[in-house]
Image 1 (cartoon, chains in turn red, yellow):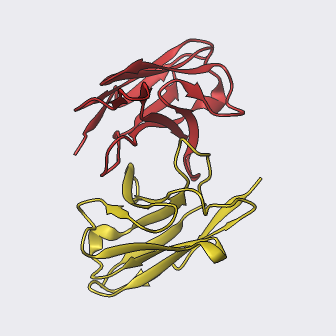
Image 2 (cartoon, each protein chain N blue to C red; image 1 turned 90 degrees about the vertical axis):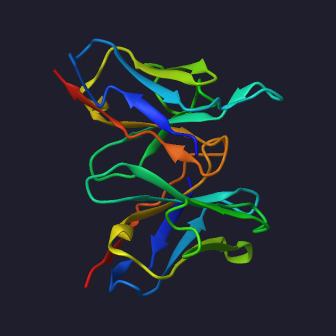
Length: 113
Length: 116
């Protein structure tokens, strides 16, 4: 199975600052035939289902603010949230859909410092 | 705008069975794979199963393989999760969801509690 490891587990950031969450996969999720990284990022607020932010590692889902950006390739990825807003408080998960069983990272809890 | 609605959760004794349903409205899921994902109380997300658009193949997490069966009825825009031999560690909110490279649709989830 592909193990997804996020860091840090908890991230306190001041309003207006930048937050960066990292995700490392135990094997590459890059499909060389099409150049796509099968990596998504989700945001989950308390009591709600997850919300898709990023897919193909760097493609922003429709309606997601451009403060959210994804980068990386192969086994190392990151989610960056610029100009942190109070409504960004949530748990963030990376998710590989390259190979079954699909897997999620353990989650990173983003909070306001 | 489309939505997914899960149902069928509840309290069940260990070893018993339960069938979850996920009905799609406003979105045509017949051309997409569909997933089930679960979340134990206070824990992270765990992928459970996926079924291809035509139902021809299914894949499972090791933790549920041999006990859970995912199926679909495209004529009714519905996906199912048959859960047998339930255990206490199957207690979770179960979500159905579309694949991330297709769209962002998740249901609100249905709670399954396995307890004696």
